[in-house]
Image (cartoon, rainbow, N blue to C red; front, side):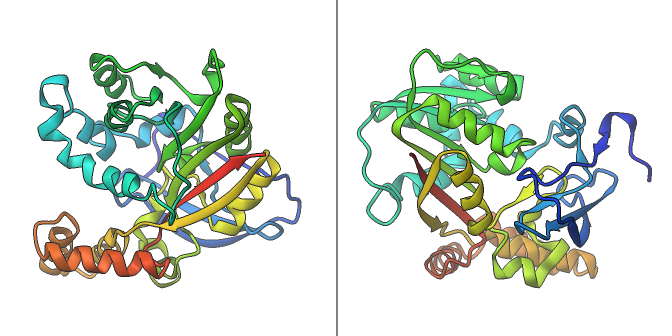
Length: 317
């Protein structure tokens, strides 16, 4: 099925300027929303960074974020009068991030100025504001940003590339599963550096492409999220980007979440026509069955650095 004109693709070189060429890893498709097209993941022969290439252009990428795109779909439920009851959709992963605010994950930080990249409807901004932080958000989706603004949260609507400089620098910039969507990661990290105080912190979460799951499931790995994920980072390749833009990775932690594994197993079952078993894995991933084993498996994978989901905490140097 040919791609529509609004879903334009482009060939993009390695952002680190490597000239050794690429090796094709494998080709996959959009398994989340069944948009047309096949997309190849390549690995740079020099720096080893993996990326989707060809990839959607900055204009064409909007085609691959339909109205049912999960982060936008969830945010529709978050309005001022229903924040408390709807927070259950997003609160558990956010609570995991907040509980990680300990010696295992990051040094304790005093409340200061924080920017969230890709803040959606502002649930995390709201929670951090309650903890005494002065918060700002940046969100591409006008609908999601409108909900955040309706809660009184300051949110810039638009792309990171067009955002204006803040009135004063930030102590902390965060992006939860956003960085892998950005077309220009070096430019973004440079901007984060410019917007941060000396010694400021940067926290980014994303799939871990060094995970054993990618080696096993390949194009069926849930963490790929083609073609929305333009880059597929490993700690080593992410460290290189951070170092080139004035950041030093202080520590990583892996999320206590088994859903990459469960959803990848669901994809395998769907491809084989085992729809009953696929539904079982979906129920477990969504917490409708085996809630306690789900949590135990997540904790085990997180402790083993094997959940395929990681967060890096980096400091401005």
